[in-house]
Structures are given as structure tokens and as C-alpha cells.
Length: 52
Length: 332
Image (tube, rainbow over all chains, first blue to last red; front, top):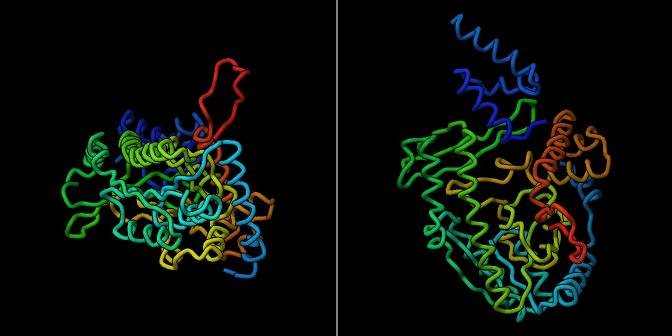
């Protein structure tokens, strides 16, 4: 379980480190609530970005 | 909303409730704390008005001091409403404009620097507030948004990064902490107690600044739902202008309601959700009473638990590595 400041820090870290832009509708537990989910989500975002 | 259902769940006998609190205040302040009166910071809101009225009953108007502490971002009616309350009770008021203190610690400057990192055009004449999206209708995590308004009325919205959010809140907390410092000055100078004004929603959900408005010697309405505070306000004949004013945080330059910053719902519905959660009432039942989806009541219940966890530290006194048994431990 993560609090709102925790989500804020995580989102900022992921956006900066992996050069992705996370939309509000992507701020879901299934994208961010476990390490595995975060890895899967960031990988998908990077693939989307390189495909675009 | 069903008025009957609300009346049933949060029903309170105002006369009895006032009597209980007045007796407790005399016992706590007089016998336990050994102080001879009360200082209350009055904001023109319902909670501080009811609290100061209770103190006037407990200690007499001559031993109750209302502190009025506006600053440059306070809404224009704050001072006038506070004076109306104090005058109706016949108590003494002291006005401390805290703007010069806040300027000296660079409260506004530190805050505005952080705001400008998010909205570079933010400057003279601009106003802003921080908004948190509702929990209703979605399970997404919620991030704070900065809403800024230009002098011409144009609105700019931007997601707040962690550093800027934390800096803006930290700088703004100077306001509550400065007020508390002055409350204790006047309390020490009169040998009075500082009486805090949180209602149950605020106390339970951690809607206060640690060592700011969260600090007090006694919190006489912390067990009352906000709906019940309004009942007491009627009984105590608090001026109608105060009873009819919508709750506000009165902290940011752009008007901000409490439910767009912190609580998920307006207070009357939030009260019933908190009551329902505290008493094991099924979300479906509360949903019927307040006219929102049961799924949303479930989300509010979860948000209540989440806020309790994340704000627990606000209630804690300094923690020790090893006990000092000669000093009894207590939390706020």
C-alpha cells in the first residue's frame, strides 16, 4: 500500500529515469502497486514510445 | 440525502453534549492542567466558533481570549465573522496579523518559488490552490494538481511533482505553526490553556499540521462529527453568518473547499461514511442514505483507512529509544 506522496515520488522517479510520460488514467494499482507491475508497466511504456 | 436517516445516525442532544464538554473542560483545564482560562484561535469557521463558545461557558467570558490571526491570503470575511462571534459571547479579542512574521521566515517566497517551478508565469496578482481528485468513480491513484489563476482570470492547471508539492505544503505550514506560537504566547502570559478546535473528521483523518493547528492542551470537540458541531452551533446561538458559511481551508490564495483538498465528499456525506465505517454499517446502506454508489462508499471507507495509516505519525509525540518510566508517556 502506498500513500499519495509515495505515488507522487514514484511517478516522478519513473518519468525522469525512464523518460516516459505517465497519464492520469494510467495511475492504477495494476501498473504501480508491486515491483513486478512497475517493471511490466515501464517496459510497455518504453516499447510504446520506441514504436511511435 | 435522507434527512431522517442522517438525523437518526448522528442525532445528538445538544444541551447534554454542551454540558458534558463544559464539565470536562473545567476538570481538564482547572484540575489537570492547572490553568485558569482558555486561548482559542478563532477563524470565523464553525469549529473554532463552537469551541470558543464552549470555553466562554466553561470559564466565563472574562477568562476566555479569542485570538484573530489573519494573513494576506485569508479571505476578507474572516476577521469580521470572528469579531461577530467574539462580540456575541462578550469575550476579549486580540488581533495578530501574522503576515509580517510569515514574510520574515520567507513563507510566501519559498512557496511562490516552488509554484513558479510548475507554472513559470505565476507572479504578482496571481492566485493558486492545490486540488486532489475525488476517489469517487475510479480506483486510480490520485495526484495533486496545482490550479493557478492569473489576474485576468485565466486558469492554468499542472500536475505537482513531489518536491514542489512538499515544498509548497511545508512553506504553507508556517501559517498554522506561527498561529500556534502566538496562541502559546498569550496562553503563557495569562496562565491559560490552549484549546484546539478539530472536529472528529479532522482529528481522525489527520487533517491538521503537526505542531501547528494539531497542537493544543485540550481538544474539546474532537469526538464530534462535523454535522454534530453544527447542531451545537445552533444550540449555542453562533451567529447565522458563521453557521451558513461553507467550510473552507482558508490557507491558499484561491478559495479551496475542504473536500477538493482532503476529504472525498462534502462534510455531511463524509460524516455518514465515517460513522458507517466506524460502526460496521454496510456500504450499501450508507450509499442509499447519501445517494451515491455502494462501490463509491467502499472507496471512501478504504480512503478513510488509508488516511489513518498515513497520518498516524501526526498524532505521535516524540518517540524514545528506551522508556523513561518516571515520565508518563502520552500522545496528542
